[in-house]
Length: 532
Image (cartoon, rainbow, N blue to C red; front, side, top):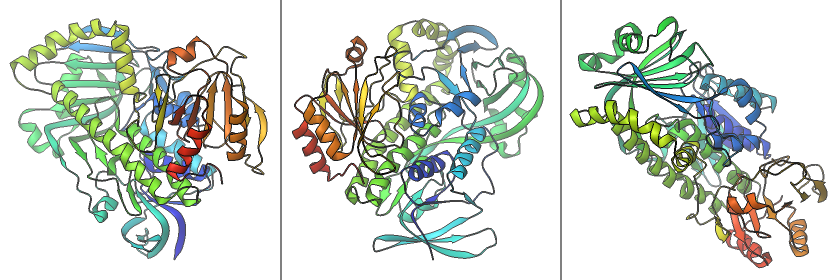
């Protein structure tokens, strides 16, 4: 019987990120996947700002930026006529170090993640299928079948299902998957060619009965078409070819197709699992929630699940927290998944609605109204924060506490950029080599600079008190001091307050001075040890 601390089933982006994060935090991980290799189609395209922020903690953001590109504008067409071009650019300026919509097709994304995992010494075991598992005391015993048909048993402390909408892990733990399926049939095609809509920007064409979106997959000449299949053809969608459905795209958007890379038809589902945990088994990504592609949220939500769970699994496996900490995964991620599915459901229902009123709104009102709304600073910021997932918070989850300024426990750390030389200094701890505290200088231009390894850290914007420095030394927690300025106040931070950040850079505790009692109570209430 083989052994590992965490067994991950499924090697899509969520499973790969979970494995990378656990490996970086010193957890012995095994990852298996039933497929013969990583994906070869660009199913998900957008990598949202919050994902890039989290990726920065593992030095993954730069490859996504270097190998992808930012979308500069959103074009609205109605019945083949260009109605508006809405500038996006740095739409989220002041909110995040990544204030744009980044395109990085999923096939490239998975290859990059697989390469990083292999560099870390972890190999995805392909054509290895989960047959079942059972809990046995403080472990899970899983039955795996490899490509040769041989079965083996694997023992692990925990098992995580990252195995998609037809999750075997979800089936075994008996978690219902309520929701439904939209009646519309869609097609998706990755193409190379020429068109005003293959301009490296986002294009959407609205007409009385159809929706057609063109998502650029390169700065020019390549894109992914997503459109509706109407009339009697939808009844036999599985037999359709691109030639059967591409007429309107070719006519309305003047698309000349040079190469068809892949084509498929599909239906869109909206479902959320009844639970994300049972005992030693967890659900991550599409295994726990599926929804419409509106807003490019699916893959990013799964990656957020993975990182939320990873640091908690590491803390429990390494004896720094009780098993009860893992309950906070479901408490934080399940309510968000439900809100997300509800939101994307309403958006999707609007843009695909039938009837004369819906058609007037879609082809007449929306093309005129969207450009006007896009000029309003409040609307632009609200749209960006929602799409980028920087608005996500866990204020009402039990793991988070306190308020300082406008920042609450459970909030994403507000991002602040500093002028050169103003980022301050930090007193570091948890030295990887010998676990001895030492002084280091902070040279970061912003407050999101990553630690050498993801872990807890304390932030002070202003002056840290000596007793706080002593507390951080005892706890072997990195203390970072940043020079106070107007940007800190604008972001919602409080001067000289303490912000104890979780490894996923959400605020665990926000407290004014004196804060030592609040810090000690936070650790006691959650039975946490912040260092090994």
